[in-house]
Amino acid sequence: MVLPESVRFGGVKPQGLEPVHDLDVSTDNRGVKQKKYPSDISREKFEEIRALLESARKKTKPRTVDLYEVWCALLYLLKSGCQWRMLPGEFPKWRTVHSYFAKWSEPDQDGISVLERALKKSGWRGPYQTEAQRHD
Image (cartoon, rainbow, N blue to C red):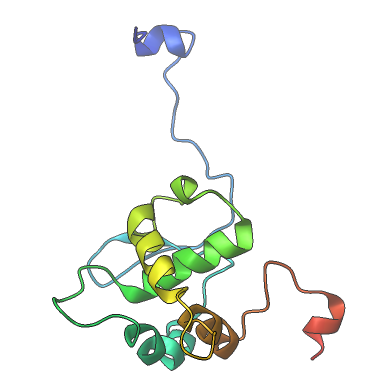
């Protein structure tokens, strides 16, 4: 049963709520709002690993998702440790991100996955950096 708004909020309709985070909210070239998360990397840094990530999948049809957004979603998951289904709505659907994760995680003939190579090339060092890692 859904209660009327006046009952749910004690007769007072809530006004605009202030955000409880300090994340930047920007607009992309399509006018879609996109939050910036601390785990995101820059587009310039992503361009260094784009070819590596694209090499893991045969081009049978055009991509319908921005590979940069998939990569940032994956970094968010790795850094936060959240469950797949708890991926914030600003990222692509969790099933899409998971399918790329599964493909990128397959080891090659040397036993190293595209994901491992891309993480290393992008400079990602895990969910938390120790003081020693920061000064490498």
